[in-house]
Image 1 (tube, rainbow, N blue to C red):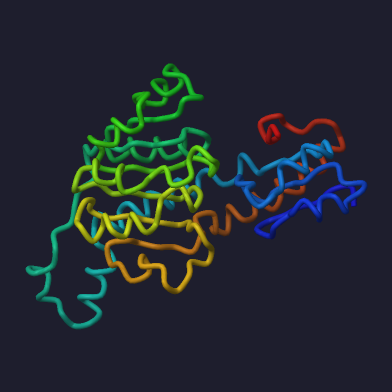
Image 2: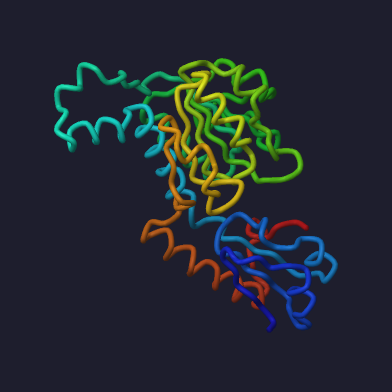
Length: 275
């Protein structure tokens, strides 16, 4: 094969080595932690991602999770369906997101789509991304912060949009969680492993934060003994933020188009991962 398209399967070094004619790997998505980068680099293989296809779907999913947690969707829905309508005076109160502070950690295309939706709720948007200029962030209505550890202390919502690497692995741990506001909502629709799941469960049980939303997990599917599966303060989805009909169509087309563009020598550099 001269090209390979890949979705969630592992593309190990051995598999890449066996592709004697392989010139490009086109990933159906923006993450690429399932591709052996070392071997790809050694063999001078181009790695492309669907950089423009999924930003809207993921940004909408973050808002979906945020509202579901803030408005206690599961709890309120269940109370009516189970015939306990009068529980409305007994159930925990919900939260408005109007005028709340949100930190978008990672400001690529998804973060830049998310900020538009947050501003629609008149939220105060702060952005942490060392690779994006203050001018760019300001032009989109956000405020740049330089210290992630300090900035989380004053946030009502934190949404993660970073890659998983040695620097971000277990970045959100108990020490960081306990510095957050007690009404804070934490959302991860980026990559599992950025949040230490055991530490998150502990923080939720100790009421250190209001709630959390996870679309991604350190192990997928999560193991049956993962305590978050039984924690009613966390809202979960099965790594499906991009699973809209529209987004899946865009991603499929872009995955193939990247291969075509590569051989036509017109592949956009913004879609190529620097190895």
